[in-house]
Image (cartoon, rainbow, N blue to C red; front, side, top):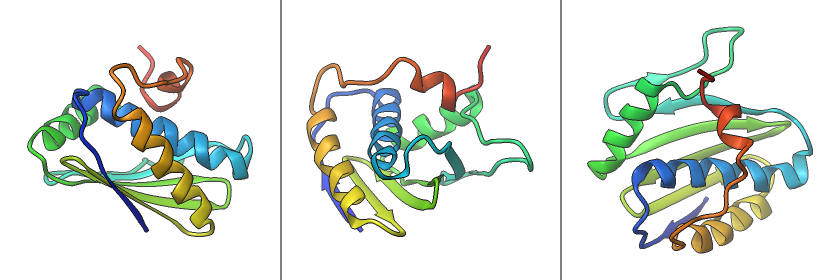
Length: 137
């Protein structure tokens, strides 16, 4: 498990999307174009899992719960899968931790990239990523 302490002026929504995007992007280096699956999201009050066989997507109520939890500096836990790689991550206040099942190299790459991106005023995000993890309206 790798952990990053960061100082960021980003709002919680931008932190959330930055963390998810770069976790996905770095896992894709070894897992190719396998789907990025959100398997579980846990806040202090709720746990979200996909309704089989559906994918877990970020709906407005889920995002609102995550943002509220992040704004209160309480932990939000994520379980994600991309190909054969299973990733767990946690964000609490200005600390992010990530653990991968198979490749510590991916952990290191995620931490290194987030160390840069979370300190930017405008972090780099691919515009096509958000529609893949959120509900399209």
